[in-house]
Picture 1 (cartoon, rainbow, N blue to C red):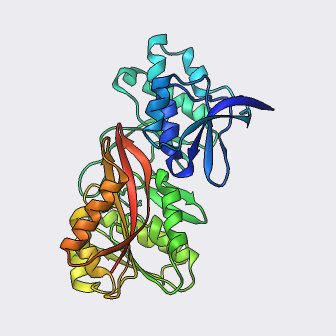
Picture 2: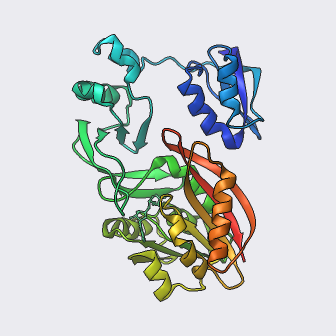
Length: 355
Ligand SMILES: C[S@@+](CC[C@H](N)C(=O)[O-])C[C@H]1O[C@@H](n2cnc3c(N)ncnc32)[C@H](O)[C@@H]1O
């Protein structure tokens, strides 16, 4: 069944932010499926936004506009919220977690403190409403430390934190309590794998369990990937994942601090460097530049952007740091917001050609 609905028409690169904003402003029509074409995403709304709401949305991009369009209606399953309505006091329903990360058969949710007494009920309903989920984990700390780990509590199902997750054509052994992994980065892992060209040497400076490295190696016949991580567990998973996907011959894995590894073994070897450690990548730009061939190459630089700052700020900051390291950003090839990581904080990527 289709239905005509008012919507916002958003350039593709701002869709994820606009969707989060529509959620936040309670504008999203959850009964209709989001539409897209080559350049735009169409987000159905449940009512016409007020002038202030529209202005707030347009802060993300001036190209966002109101429109009307036909949308497919979503199939109506009895939702997790509907099931919980019977178990929770009404004033707590608005606090129910909406976002969940699904890593194969493990579901990860963030339960706000006011719902702490109901975590088991919430977990059980998530199990009931998601056929493939076997374990529900609640986030029990922030992501912290050099290894970028957080604590989890099992709130329903099998008590485990390890599984085998599929991302595009690759499979990954993952233990979320031992090594960093986020399914929200899957499109980004795939985007970078598609940019790599045959014959390239790629350095993944903060490789984790290997989602960039393995996808790149699997997608290309003739590539050499160097993958570094400081977390011994991540490196063990990375080696296992390289074997699982039959790409171990294309990936050389190093355990250690990437600054030290580059200085000792990888100066001037890479056509492309991936720097996915957003909170610290700026500190490593100098060694990333040293890892690039003398003729130059591409850096994929990840950073966090807080409200009030822009993608352009991240580009300028990268260019200044590259210049300080004695090289030059010849061209910013691409940049975008990847995902919201905290209220008013976004992970962003800048792809830059360095000479
Ligand atoms: C945000 S995670 C990214 C993992 C992976 N690239 C991905 O997309 O899933 C950052 C990784 O960098 C590692 N790390 C942190 N500091 C490091 C350093 N100085 N040298 C090497 N690895 C480091 C952490 O252990 C963690 O696995």
